[in-house]
Image (cartoon, rainbow, N blue to C red; front, side, top):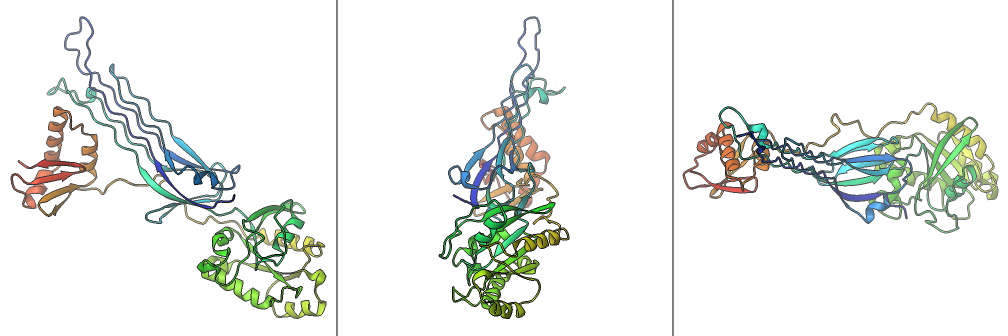
Length: 417
């Protein structure tokens, strides 16, 4: 089964908690704190591999989670960092953030990687908080959660040349004649229901040719099969537009040519602007006068071939190979400045009054809350000291807070005093 569009949820590993511990060796009175830091959570990494050619495996498993960091231990021992989770995808996979539809990465090279979710940072142990004033800190930080995001993965085939045209015009037969590909061939519409790839050798050159399932009018709006597979011609540098001139189907090749080009323009402006070579196929059973009549009414480069007998195919493939030398491959998206998605809250401190309580948010505040163990009295006291130090109390008073009002920070509620 060929699958080219899936949604998955990826979660990076959480950071390990810092340890609260004190030295208790014989003859070492008041040895002091020795709680170690927690390890960082593992990242989620997407990796493009040429061995895969479909997203089928993601139909059966949609949730992926990297390893959590290990908590710190006594003796100033650092917890183990969580291992990164590497998810293999086919070369040609486009990565989107499902909710925002933001395009994140174009994995168009073998072995190319992309960090799609970053692991949480490990919490600091109590040994890190000892100072001349507080020589025996009894609290440590919790590890931060890892990033989680829903992704839409879309596979766009890595083909140099795309075969386009209405159903049953002979695209699959042509591909089978010029390459080792063996697509299903039969005399009824929509024989090809998945894209087929073949490597074509033309002298010292070679290129990848894709047989795209047939288009019909309205394909760009989802009719027929064309809407599902038009994305696979987006990466191509050149299109071979195949027309049936046998007359057996009763179709008008000129009308078909106009209709398919209209569908390409409806789907994507870039497709409509790609160079095209028009191929008049099934010439072995067509009347020569009719072939010439059609040929005279078509613009640009036109080749007359037969996918069954192979007539004209060698000349066509050599011409295509020559054209590709002047058409360099271009990535669909510009590289991101940072390989990591920024899922952190905004900077600054923001106070909103919602009904009868005050909501405090902002990156510094939310990270501080995430690191605090609210079951530990020392940690809670330190949390409130830090809120005062970074100006949260001043913001609340400026917003008109009164004693006894409720304050919400992250998922915690407090009473203002």
